[in-house]
Amino acid sequence: MTTEVKPQAAVAELMDGIGRAARGAAQALALSSSAERNRALQCIATRIRASSVDILAANKADLGAARQQGLGHAMLDRLMLDANRLDVIAAGVDAIAAMPDPIGRVISQWQRPNGLAIQRISVPLGVIGIIYESRPNVTIDAAALCLKSANAAILRGGSESFRSNTALHACVRAGLSDAGINVAAVQLVPTTDRDAVGYLLSSMSRWLDVVVPRGGKGLIRRVQEDARVPVIGHLDGICHVYLHTAAEVGMARDITVNAKMRRTGICGAAETLLVDRANADTILPPVANALLEAGCELRGDAAVCAIVPQATLASEADWATEYLDAVISIRIVDDIEQAMQHIRQFGSAHTECIVTEDQAAADRFCREVDSAIVLHNASTQFADGGEFGMGAEIGIATGRVHARGPVGAAQLTSYKYVVHGCGQVRG
Image (cartoon, one colour):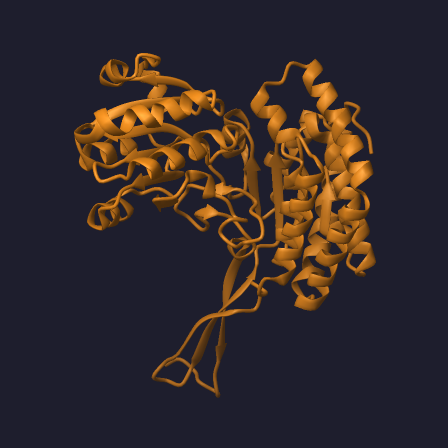
């Protein structure tokens, strides 16, 4: 493993070698059995638990370097690993191993009048490139989900997590080897040279079938603009909590604080709170006080500032800002129609929540709000593949083509048609 800058020709040689090996591994994985891939996942989980001291030491070195570079609190939180987070990562791999095989499923089948029997069957996508920042857990989540769905993976983590990613990838390689699977099934780009990312996006279409970015706005925009293969991902996570006029005060308070403050640096964290005018005087003070006590800065419109003196006046830009920090914008709306209009105008189609005891209002909100995830009476922090029972996720997709919402193993598949006949010819 090395971090030195490489000449462009050397980068091309390195990346093409990785791509060629991944394509060969993908062909073998597509023919592997569910038991073989599950065995590899179990071996990876075992290796993670056995290597916790080495992984945490590598992560400590990454954190030290990141602090020296002045990385913010949100980035440091994403980067940090501890014993509990490692346990969660390993448990996620076990959960993925225990899930049904997403490959070879008969999605649908029918018979034509001429006797042809047609089946649509799930198949792997092939080779998936994952480009990510800060979060070392993505190394394992991506590896496990790709392996479960019989896809080869090329991982390119951020320079700030290079040591952590390398230590985690060593567990993946060892687990694959323990299970007798080609270690090229999951490869980590062994350099922090930015040219490697550019080459992967622009010149590896012969090897790659899809790219999944996971990180900040700049990274995701670059991937979406430069990639020569399909991209699965989202740009912003501007998530809303809407307190409807029929919201119960205690529930509204608990959900809002959790949605904003449980982890402020994740894409499912709430960034804007919308409150119905009819109950703003009664519901906003306890919710705002709970946010303030949790250390959250409040930015509100004029009506909010009149009710909550500690709030500062929000600018127009605040409604379109993904803070990823202990800051929330608050707006009072006339009704559910204005709340949904605000979400349509400023939202990023990621995750929205309505808090209400009015089932008709909840049904309307869930039907008419066109985001990847819509919740009723639950925190936006549940926007997570693990919480959805997927074991883990490779990211949240907000597009409308192929995958949408948490991208788990089942979302990393395509399909083919298998047609059985008995000698039919077309006239």
